[in-house]
Amino acid sequence: MTASSTRRTTVARTRTAAVGALAVAGALILTGCGDQTDSGGSSSESASSSKAPLFDKLPAKIQKAGVIKVGTNAEYAPMEYQEGGKIVGVDPDIAAALSKQLGVDFQFTSGSFDGLISSLNSGRYDVAISSITDTKARQEGLDDKGKKLGPGVDFVDYFTAGTAIYVQKGNPKKIGSIDDLCGQKVAVQHGTTYEQALQKQSTTCTKAGKKKLDIESFDNDTEAQTRVKSGGAVAGVNDYPVAVDIARKADGGNAFEVVGEQVDAGPFGIAVNKDNKELTSALEAAVNAIIQDGTYKKVLDKWGAQTGAVDKSVINGGK
Image (cartoon, rainbow, N blue to C red; front, side, top):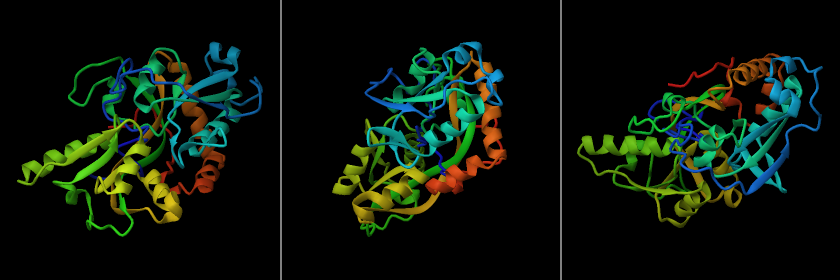
């Protein structure tokens, strides 16, 4: 999750799985390992195969296992969510495409978002894929005040997005942009980059002589949405594609609407332990392969996420 979601363009789901100083390895704002309550199946039905184009680029340990263990927080439709007991969405479909390039399965397990990076660095997962915004803080394992919390992670960037504001249908408080949130109560998921975006905006408000934001942070995004729907908060923030999906689906499209422009656009990345350079390199090659062969575009078209497309994957492209 992010402070970005094509999600992401000027002021600042992912995802962001998003996440601002969460970037830590053993403890980003991601402080715990998270409850691994939901398990998704493999992203591919095929077993490991040395015939896959990029199989030889994988670490020997993963070649032998035939599996890449993926940590996610499956609460961010259309990026990743649960349907019929299975984790589906943009990210699982991208993983399925990567599976064909690498010759190993991607097995998703859903847990708390703020525990993904620490769980990754503890060895519970090989990677984390959950609309996680790639930021320098996460790369370096820093909290939102610049304090070192862990080793950080490397990111293989594959999408771009920014923060979006959603309000009750009809926009009763006439919110037009993030600047209109000064002095207002706003709901958000804890540990995300868009929570940090709100904190930054609150400071901007007070410097301008206005009232600070009243930020209510929740353990999951569903609680934040409920708060907005009930009128307890005038607005919620989320990654752009997620906010659009919420507005389109909740109560048949009658609960919310997205207002203003998305802000703080930035890259989503596959998080990988910094000691696993071989896996990072293999994933970068695989993402670029599916971009080049057109599979990547088909996935984004399927989910209506075309605005987040990138032309090329890079490692640690976040700022």
